Length: 216
Image (tube, rainbow, N blue to C red):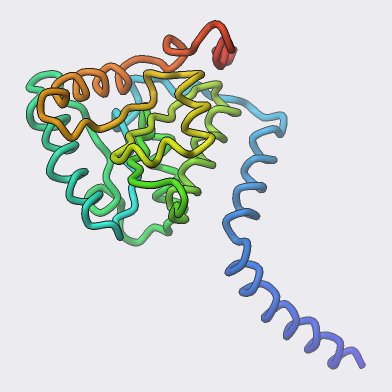
């Protein structure tokens, strides 16, 4: 009976653990770190000077048009054409370390960057990487009281999202719409540079909220 019970337990664990990891592995991992953040322990401050990147750029690389815009427009404008004011971007296929898991690279990218930029072509079908990055950005808001989210909308149809509309109402400068007319693109890059280099607290609409307070 002991051998039978032990073997049954091992078989059950061998079936349950991979199934839970496949179905809700990210949710369990996120809840674990969220609970860990609220445990009484020594909190350290992540100084702006110690951050490796100015922005972590998250996008759905399956969409070739979005990937092409990120690498040939966003990267070129922010890293190559700003001269001494060039920004350091973190890109998945270029800067993630091989050998590390997806969650390890994702965690390091969000917490090693001043801002997290979400490049969206639509909001009705969002990839798992975008959702995971958004949850980590929200967790950073809970831990460090830092709003690091910047939305770049490539198509006006994405404005139908309730979150995007709410975000624009609360913090308008952190939601930018890509203008397809060349005459407005200069203003877009200037506004994006401001959004990436300044704290989002300065952009909040005081009529609706005060924004996140600085952690003591």
